[in-house]
Length: 247
Image (cartoon, rainbow, N blue to C red; front, side, top):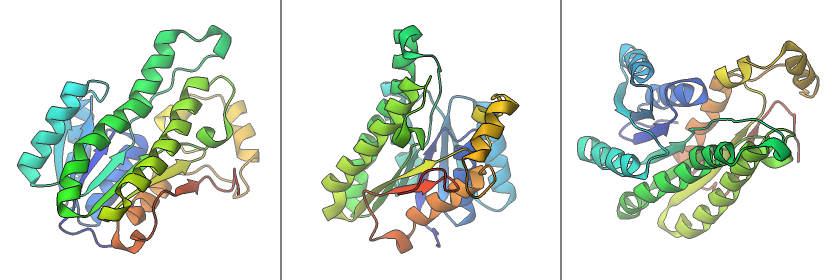
């Protein structure tokens, strides 16, 4: 899965799954543009990549802001010449039961998790069409497939990403551009670290492999979907959940 000469953009690259994806893509030879709001954390990821002889570009941006998204992608293309791989990973949670959920919390989650993926994808379509090669990978969630009480906004955004993935795959497939989704299950990240031990143990019982996943488990799958080896896969949702959901 050699990615030498490829240019990748990873959103939400400052921590967790996005950070692991950026490091793995760089390890396989891609030049990686790191996109997130926290510049200091992005600098730390870039330093780790550079320390391992990889190539990284720090690109701070708020992916809820359409103007910032447009300027970010223009600057990446100006500096790195092209974009081959887009990983739409940025995501947040604002958990609450539907009957109590505030509209602002619904909008924030949909804007960050779903609308940003649509906006970022729009920015890479033209360059990918010109080069007749591209990989778009959306990070969804097992809860976009099963639903989750208290996470109607999050589950809806992640289910929407799956539909978006399939629509893009159909629109762009004839130009050698693939679009796939990766659906993590219970992964050890900052987002899950705040959960109670009781909830973690309950989740663990539902995982046949008997362990919580790591960001690297997800990153390896993203690197595969970004590679030539995955050239005949599109519109697919790759489950990375330890068997939590099957079928």
